[in-house]
Length: 403
Ligand SMILES: *Cc1c(COP(=O)(O)O)cnc(C)c1O
Image (cartoon, rainbow, N blue to C red; front, side):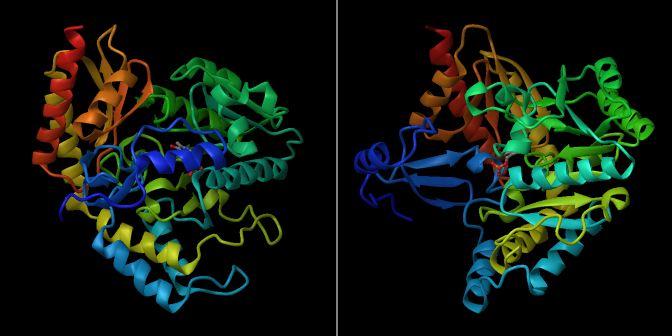
């Protein structure tokens, strides 16, 4: 493909945005118009290597031909009939998600935050079933679970925004990885422990095995549900289909979204047997959820990702990426698993400035905290892509170290 200008361009797009869009996002100064595999092109025709994939959404690469084909074929046949009727792609996808994870039932959504809303409803109703009248949900500090009010109330760092209050009652948090504090916080009123097995938005911090085991044990003793928010860690990102598979615990519920649709919006709340029968007719619903096009896209994604060869590739390439990054001047540490990588920078190097510089050099990453770059490349990249990205990060960091 030739690198040519397309569309109205950044300046005009920006002018429209400034006049018409709510000011909820601080965007980087680039207007993407096209993607293919690990590459993106902006409106000026400049090419980028994408090590962010729309925040771990386009994990099979941009516009993967199998996903494009599934969406194209299904969108010609049937786009929507609502959840008042049966549709085969939804049923097939539910079977695949359940069989590949906890074995219970699935509720589909259009986003990650909605998948967590479903999990919160399940947890509260499950607790009411044990006679708990004021159920509580316990999370770790710096967890991120979403922006709707239930998920927001379970996101300690955002729930403090009083201008958006009041939050939902019944949410509390304990310091990340503090097994003793978690055991202390979980009691007879606890409906669930809702945590990310690796905190993503916080800057890629894996939860320790000790804390996960404490969460499992405390939930078992209290009769509470252990819920893993796998919206960022799931669908192959960490080198197993679900991140919990690489931990010593099995949760009762997992939530998925982001990479599930390969760029098409879809989420899912997936239960094991303990939580499968909690929701009944009238308890929950969604007009759009699990429409034929979204579920066809997700089925195409799972056909690519639920593959031991690809998952091994993710673990091996992730290890190679981290090894190469740790050799660089300016890198203090790497965190994460598989191709979910946080790069801790040396003190005094501002990750946002490095991220902006990398964007100019043609590498897309993000800076979730002032000392960390986050890398979420497509799972289908090869070692040449890794070498290119590491080369660009090395050059960029050299400039910052000299300042
Ligand atoms: C992105 C994310 C969410 C929210 O998903 P949306 O689709 O933006 O609603 C929730 N939890 C985690 C761990 C996430 O990374």
